[in-house]
Amino acid sequence: ANRSPGSSRASPGGDPELGYGSNRFDGPARQSPEAAWRWFWYVLADWVAQLACWFAACWAAFVWVLRRFCYRVKEAMLHVSDSVHHWYYPYKAKYPVKVDVPGFQY
Image 1 (cartoon, rainbow, N blue to C red):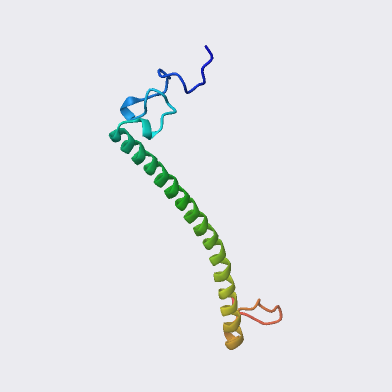
Image 2 (cartoon, rainbow, N blue to C red):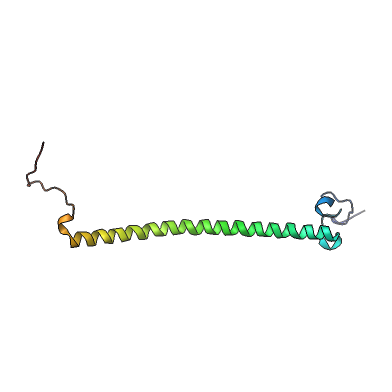
């Protein structure tokens, strides 16, 4: 006889302990109330786990972008600070040694 995959009452894959009926296509409406609640909590836990993984991935991506962005901003601020410092205190600026200036050697 031709039967659809979900029409057999002895379909493999059913797990009565987990609240699934003998047919793996049975929803919570055909199950006992305890099994329906167990099914609901498993679905809710799965949804919360997926949401937590999504938030963790988004947070990791945000931190990665923030680190790369903050490094560029920090380097630009240090460059501006050094430029102002060298402009305001020109005697503290480090320049290469000139060839015609005598120096001391030990």
